[in-house]
Every structure is written in structure tokens, then in C-alpha cells.
Image 1 (cartoon, rainbow, N blue to C red):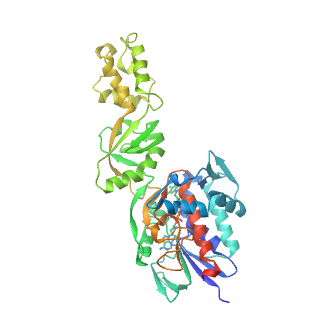
Image 2: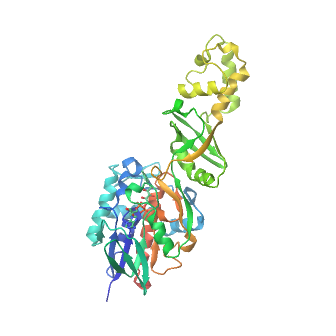
Image 3: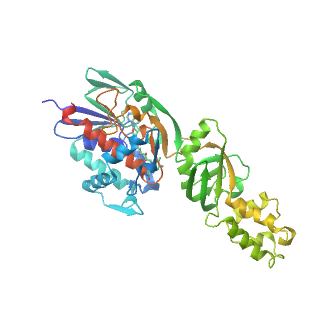
Length: 406
Ligand SMILES: Cc1cc2nc3c(=O)[nH]c(=O)nc-3n(C[C@H](O)[C@H](O)[C@H](O)COP(=O)(O)OP(=O)(O)OC[C@H]3O[C@@H](n4cnc5c(N)ncnc54)[C@H](O)[C@@H]3O)c2cc1C
């Protein structure tokens, strides 16, 4: 009996996992990778440590047009299955507050076990081979690279999004998907830094402050990092895809930063009130010493029209209170995001209403499967995007290999 020939287009996280799950005695599996080796992006994940998943995962950790699709993926291939898969392949894992890493905290360990596994399973890897066109041919597919044409029975498209294009994912997979008749949801860079309008960011570049970032109904907490052009850090990353879509719709984007989130205004008023009478002879700079990072405090003082070297007594308590009120609700105007080069993921992509969430098979083209970031699903920071790549890769692989579907 002829084996089912399965092509995996894109040898990233989802493609490698797809290939591993597609191998059985009835299949022969080939990965096409445009780079000279597979899994390049995995090496740069999690600052080189690879945060490969999260045990506290839920639908709320993901965005996409169809939350039911995400929910179904979580049911079909829960995080525990990802953990078991990696452990079976020989990877020793470490968990920190739900965040999963290889125990060695070296991303290369994750890629190594995936590479060993595809070698053991006899998956063929054709590197330096970008698939430029995919056509239906009878009940199968014809794949065109620059130099060759290949015939396959089934195809798994796992070409990634547009983020970090140097690693190979430059968005060309969207064209392959759309040429096969699939709709695309507009893409934007996500998990990315935000560029702001106000002129004073150079003054506070390098400052880090724990705080809360609010954009419309979205709120995120964590370490905010100020750069010479705007803001960065985990809470900013988490909001960035919603900001990016708002900017795409040409909406005004105003974020509010609270860098004194542990304290309410009343408490802060009381704190300054208690010190006001006794410290009137000090300078304003001295009066506010130690509450916040010096550069940040100095900016807030200036923005309130107060001179740092003036005596405290020159100002009313109300005026001084304004400084801390500004620290609690500091408005910043976002005028753009950094580009896909700096973005960790791409929001938007292949419309998931055209993909079966149980199998990852296209509802339009039988035998054609999707996996990974190419789909219109993006996760927050915390291992969710790699989880989604592993889970959808595994589902696509095992379902493409299902002999009953051949
Ligand atoms: C700096 C950085 C850090 C990150 N850290 C984390 C983290 O710690 N945790 C986390 O969960 N997520 C993280 N992510 C996100 C995560 O890496 C991605 O979501 C995930 O790798 C997506 O997997 P994928 O298989 O869909 O795509 P990719 O990993 O991008 O793989 C796609 C592959 O397809 C190949 N390809 C593209 N087109 C073709 C073609 N036409 N023919 C042949 N080959 C093709 C590409 O060369 C590439 O190898 C990070 C991303 C970046 C950029």
C-alpha cells in the first residue's frame, strides 16, 4: 500500500511538532524549510531560555476573532499533552509560577530534542527550500520551490506570521493560504514596544517602574520600561495588539500609566499632608525623594509647573498633591508600534472560521492543514504562543496522518 505523503511547509515550532505527530507506518513526512536549518526562531524565544508553555493557560490568554476556536484547541490538545510530549522526547522541564522552560534554561535544548526526534522518526528535511506556490493536483497537491516541483497527498502550512522576519517568517505563508482560497484577518505587530508622541521620553529613557497600564477596557500590570521613543515592558507588550488595531483604525490612542498602583489617592494625599508642615523648608526635590525613580519624579514635578529647587513652602499642598496624582494617571499618546522586526508575534492571519478546530484541516480544501502563528490567534506573553504552535502543530500532524482520512 502506498504511504500518504505529507508535506510540512515551514520547519518552525508548529511545523516540527506537526511532522513528529504525522509520522506513522502509513505516512512519509517531509519538512520544507526556507532557512538552512529548522527552528531558528525557537533559539531566540524567552530571551534564549524558551518559555515553551504555561500550566495556568486559559482562553483568556489568547486573542483572535473566534474564541471558540481557541477553546477547542485547548480541549483537543491541553498543556498537559504538550508537557507529556516533550517529556517523552527526553526534555527535562522546569516550572516557575506556571511558566514552563527547559530545565537547562537553554532554548537550544528544546530545538535539540525536536531535531533528534524528527531524525529518529525518519522525517525528511529539505532545507534552503522556500515553497513559492501550492496547487491542487487531483486529490493531492503540487508544491513548487524555485528549482523543483513536488507531489504530496496532504499539506500542513506552518509558515509562521510576519514577526521577526530574519528568522524566516516574513508573511509569505499568508499568500499561500489565500491562493488556496482562505480569507485573512488584517495583521498587526503584537507583543511589541509602543512609540509615543510626547517629547520628554528621552529624559526618562532607561527608567523601569512597576505599574499598571490602562488602555480603554484593558489593564495590565508589571514592569513598565521607558525608552527614548516611548514605552516597553511586559504590560505594554500585553496591550500592544489592541493598541495596534486601534491605530490601524486611525483611532486616537491614549494610555494611562499608574506607577503608584499600590496606593490610592487619599493615602498619598495624607502622606504628603503629614510631611508638608514639617518639611516646608526643604526643596521640592528633597520633599519627593525616594518615592519614585529620580528621573521620573523630576519629570512629573516639571510637568506640574513646579521648580524642583524651590522651597516646598512656595507651593500649596494641593499643587504638590498634583505631582503624585500625575504619577497615578500619567497620560501617554501612542502614535505607532515598533515594526514586525521587533514584534514577538503577529496578530491576525488565516480566518479560523475556515479551519476545523479539532483537526486543523481547512474547511475549504480537504487535505490542507494549518498550524501555528499563521492562524488568526495570538497569545499573551508567558509561553502561550509556543503552546499554540505546539498544540496546533500536533493536531494538524496527527489528523493529516489519520489513515481513515486518506
Ligand atoms: C524574540 C522572540 C521571543 C519569543 N519568545 C517566546 C516565548 O518565550 N514563549 C512563547 O510562547 N512564544 C515566544 N515567541 C513567539 C513564538 O516564537 C512564535 O509564536 C512561534 O515560534 C510560532 O511558531 P510557528 O511555527 O507558527 O512559526 P515560526 O516559528 O515563525 O516558523 C515558521 C517557519 O516557516 C519557515 N517558512 C516560512 N515560509 C516558508 C516557505 N514558504 N517555505 C518554507 N519554509 C517557510 C520559516 O523560515 C520558519 O522557520 C517569541 C518570538 C520572538 C520573535
